[in-house]
Length: 159
Image 1 (cartoon, rainbow, N blue to C red):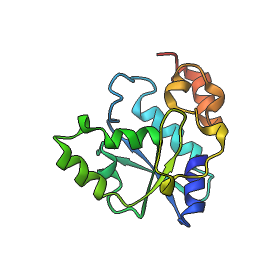
Image 2: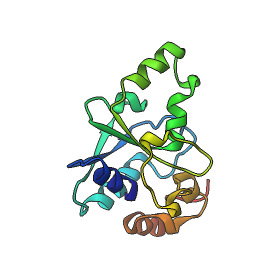
Image 3: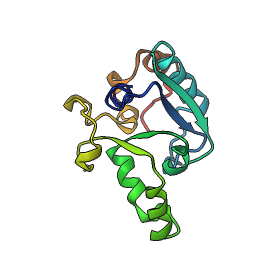
Image 4: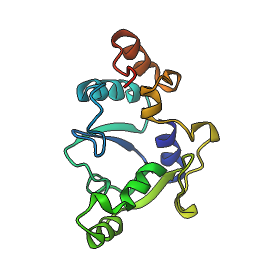
């Protein structure tokens, strides 16, 4: 949420939507939390935060999800994924997808690079936060709503 709020401020946006894909690209092995649990926790987490919203999409590629938006916010790991040819039929399709993106707001992440022109000023303490690390036990990084759900259900159990 901190990254979304930073992007909102830096880019002068009225609203940032957190897009939840019905089938997240490259996360086929993740069965917990379920889609419904993720959606409920994310919705509850942003409910009281001015300027943040949640949308559900059937799209998987960020270029498709970002269609119609002024800015696309993503982490450096997703930026690397967008540039990875393995997600496309070939370089022409990849280049077209990248060219179709709106303005970029890229959150740096340890071990990944992003173009300086699109780098968000994210505090260093956020560079290692990831859902994979949370599933591996870093539950202190969760929102209070996510932590309460995890404590009650074990939804982000070690996988």
